[in-house]
Image 1 (cartoon, rainbow, N blue to C red):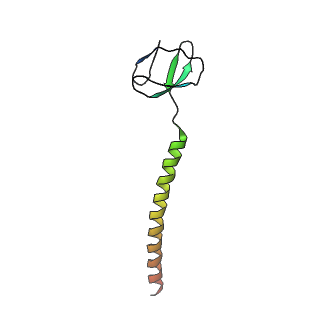
Image 2 (cartoon, helix red, strand yellow):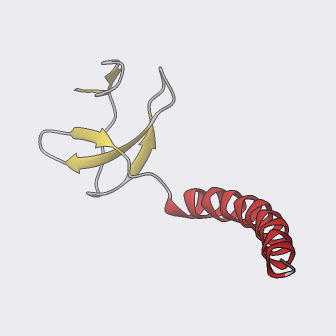
Length: 83
């Protein structure tokens, strides 16, 4: 018998492959099998695809704001050149 490293719920299953990803029946966290005999788990790695999408959307909105600031900043320079 093995235990979830997150909530310490007992997981009474047999696993055959290292690196297998399973969900804890108690808390639902994804776990990676890191040892077969005895069975041990660690938290599964986070999927980088989801993070990349979030970062991409965040960067897009920041760039739009920056472009607007740049345009108003350019107008200020134009006014100063008139003096």
